[in-house]
Image (spheres, rainbow, N blue to C red):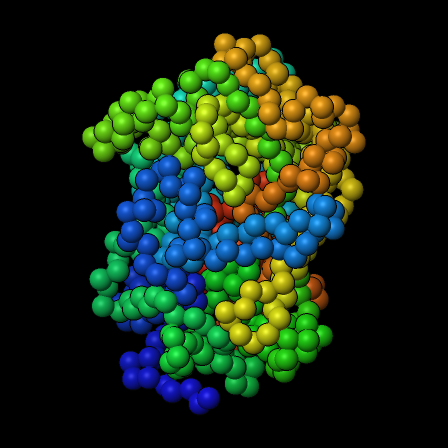
Length: 540
């Protein structure tokens, strides 16, 4: 089918993907009124009230209208299970459905990037971009935080008192209390900072896109599927898109910027003929530009959870005796933005080492003072709490490979999770510590009973089997368009696709190694830095 170049379909910059990085780029690049910017998103607008309350994290990831419901290939180290990998498919991307935790990672993560050839990506170089986007309501005098940015960052105003039992128990194991995981040190336990304000989600769309959506030089297109990048003489000239049965081409006078995430961006490159020739051949695509690293180096944080049920109704939960309280919480939320509905449930946690010899924490905790079932089931009938144990720097890497030129066909996502023996060993050591914390007498007043895995799991082999049967990801896929200097790199330190002109990737897929924490804040930082890199080209 011949593509039609529609009138008014030529822009200076085409931003493919309206997620966290795309929203930042749309804002920053359209600051220049002489630059015409177009943001293209495959999903709908995020204006629905459904996505706004903090509690929405408990259900938004399952809602197909605003997500792509991906699943991994059967994982041979996880009892052959296909792992759920939901990604945001709406303006704001996954920041419109995620847990809203604002965690930057450890400074050494970025120094490691720079040490491996990515000049300008060390901690001191990226810190200004974290601060640029941030409007921190808790640490207004800290040199490590920004207060004038567009992204609201704050601790929960009204956390659940059950969190104190977690803190007290962790203290008995010599884990210090940490006021700021993004401060001088990461190690310790404390309350998380989140991208919300007064119980309302502050997604990348709300923070960066909504305030500037009326700019005359910014066009926002939703429900548009990107089939591929148009390439001519090793140069990106535009993108091929479709809406329903209509196909057309949008031209880029300056650059095409891929911001479709760690699953979307490599898939678009491969559908454009950029990638490993063997992978492209199997998908029925001619190789235009061989680049073997496209879709490789997939990393995600493996996690496993202990679930506890309580006789006490102090933790959040749903039961007949608390129905009046639920109604009160509802009124409290609408009147004062407090209570259960103003909580993202992931209120506190911590970072620690499984071995003292480690230079930085390799484990993250997320303590949830609410009764819930394992994913995909979230809030459930009853009361209790859970502790999620997360491996921060897995050695195992996987891949994303398309099966055909059809953008509607999900790619093959092989997480290859727990392939490295040391990943499983670290998780076993960590989850045993998690049980120690939950078994403390600090929780005894809640009358707890561990129901998953339960007391039958005791030995290391028991824990390994429990992890293989129950581990998930925490939805942080990165690395599939690796930034670097080797043959496996996809982009250079300016985020330009190697060997091609006028084409960049600016999202979590460029991370050479996954960071030690949640990935939304680093993705926003990448976009802030990417915007400045592009702006510098306009002055030459």
